[in-house]
Length: 410
Image (cartoon, rainbow, N blue to C red):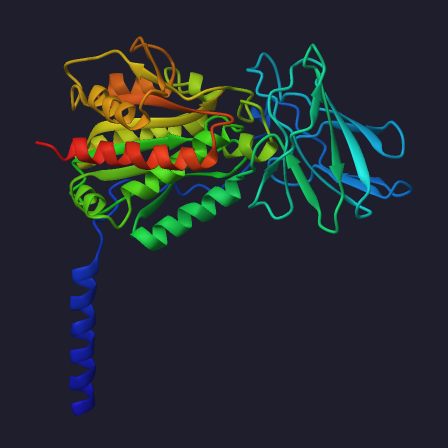
C-alpha cells in the first residue's frame, strides 16, 4: 500500500507540473492530408537532374541537389565548359538564378561560361565547400549584352558549390523552424502543401493571449536570399532573451510563415511556383494552394482566436534596399505605426536611408491583402542582392527592436 500511495503522489505531482507548463493551445486546425505531387498542376519545365561526367578531363558537374539550376552543359575544350541557364517558364522577372556543384582533379583550373539564351546575368557568383562560408568570385567577365558571364574555378580536394547567392533550401529552412520550436516553445502547424507535396509551415508564439499579432512572411520568390536572411534575424530578435523581447512576446503573438514557395526554392526557380505562377501576384484570386494555405490560416486565427494583426512584413530581395508601403489609413489596427517604425529605421541609418515607396492599397500582392482584409499596417521589406550580410543582420535587429518598442507603447 505504501508503494501505491507513493505512485499516486508522483502521478499527482506530474499532472500539476504539466498543468503549470502547458502552452496556449493551437486554435488552428492542422492540415492532415498526405503530401503528394499534383502532376496536372505542374506548368513549368523541370530540370533533368544529373551528374555531367567528363572523365578524361577529370571534371564533374552536378545539378542533382536542392536549389540547383543548370539546364544544359557542353565542353569547349579540356578546361572550358558552357552552361545553359534558363528560367522555369515565361514571362518572368529576370532573376537569373544558377547553382551547380563541381569537383575533379585538385588545383585544376576550370573556366565556366554561363549563357542565358533569353535573359541577362544578374548575380555575382558565390562559392563554398561546406554550404556555410560563401566567398564571392570577383573576376567575372560579362559581355556587353549581359547574356554571358565567364569565370574561373580552381578545383580543390572538396566538392565546390557555385551559385548566384548563398543556398538556403526548404530543408534548411525547415531545420531552422525546428530549432525555433525547440528554443522558444513555439507551435508548429502544417497549414497546407505545395503542388510538389512539400509542407507550408506556420510557427506561432504562445505566451500571449493571441488577441494581438505580428505576421512575418518570406520566400514567395525563390532566389531572394538576402530578404530571407533578414527575416531570420528579425524573427530571432522578436523571440530573443532580451527584456524588451520577453515583454513583447507576452503581449503579442508572433506568426511566422518562412517558406511559402518550397517547390520553387528547391527547383532553383527564378520566380515562380510549380504552377509557373508568381505567388506574390495571387493575393486576390488565391488560385494557388500555397497562398490559399496562408490566407486560410490567418483568417482562421481571426475567427477562432479573435486575433487582430497589428503589423505584417513580407521579406523579399531586389537590387537595393527598399520598403514598399501601403498608403496611410486611419482605420488600421494601429494607425501611424508604419511611419513611426520607418522613422526609427531612418534614425538608425543616418544619411544612407532606405528608399520608401508607397503604393496603392489595392493590388494582388501580400501587403495589399494584409492591409485591406486584416487591417494590418503591412509592408514589403526588400533587401539588396549585395547588401553586406553583417549589415542585413544589424538592420533587421534594429527594426525588430523599433517595432517592439512602438507596439508596447500605450
